[in-house]
Length: 399
Length: 141
Image (tube, rainbow over all chains, first blue to last red; front, top):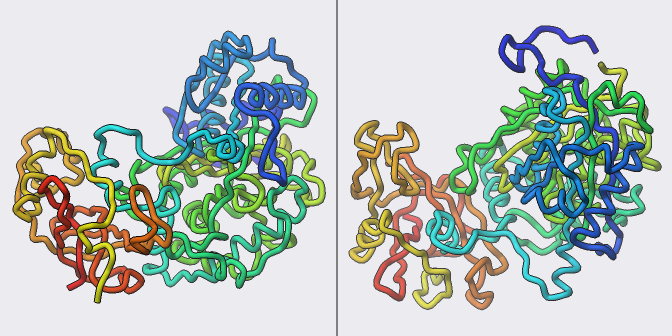
């Protein structure tokens, strides 16, 4: 697709990242039991090996590392001496930001091959009696002082507050939110690795126990083990590798709070900024998108993405999803792997958005393969609707 | 009409305080709700900070708030959240907009938690803490 006019990017308005870098290898691990054999560094190493094999590259090619934490630990473990290190840690959307940052580093010539990896095994950890959880760091901090005393369950309660606001503002219903879980589960029936593969109905969602109103149990993502990795390099080098490259057409980030009580508008996320910016860089519109991989930590999360990225107007997300268009055979496929709601969710799910988008664009998605998709959006949400990372990914034909 | 969260014996995590926020918590001993204001740009600030998040001025002062507000968003916790006891039952966590222009998290008590709704007017309700301070809850008016 030819660029139209310079509406985004760096000085002078050029699209500084469009088509400069590609995702050339992916891996992800999940199991219907929700548990994996490996954990920790061993699992991370397995993912890196698998993603490099997928790319036709070796560890010796890697000179850049992204890790949502201390990147030096995994680099040392794998024996990588990185020329580029990105330790961006913003929760679940960290991996969308890693793609953006790696694309920029590759485009600037800082490095040639970047790997990002993630592994978490909260389900197995809990069985082994290891502590886990999502919440404030100990010691005096704003969250301990101004939120924790009120007993909001996190992260789910924060998303419940957003759902409450969206319902009050726009008349969105629990049935409409439930439809997102139903459509996503339909996709999961086609994924043999999905944690849950039996179809569900709207009534099933509404009959599942209320957690933090208005969210029911089946409005909430899973807690499973899971892991994944991706490999990126320059678009030029990507052409000579094992698999068809998936090029980064657009990438953008926006965050607007850390604590939910500081979110400016609970019915509109920072995706309303990152989405249009990523589309502008890519030179595409929402109407050009064949697949949305939209972070579905909760049903409301996915609904907010649909509106904020411009797939429907603000406030119309409920009506947009009602006809089941997100599911198999529908007009607008979303989360074809079964999503965080039904496939897997180890805590920071953004890695799986990227893996599925790449597989769909390559035509490797098996029973759930879409018909020749060319443009996919992977949109991550980190924290409590805090940090949004939007990636517009395309086949080589879109360059 | 009773509501478990208005009971002084409910279990909760008591907030820490710091030198910065001591004036706020001291005022709660007298059931007074203070807000930090920036004297440079005349904006109320919440949560309290060392400098104004609008203009970075450190010319800040504490002023008493009206103690009223409007429910911006609400979620009833049907399972006990951090520090809470399942036996105390469901409770409403809300974000409340104050007329001074700030929003804070709170519990809305008095009446059934499921009846708390976006847009309802509320006023501050002081929940006693073990050390003599009070935690600002709100109740419907």
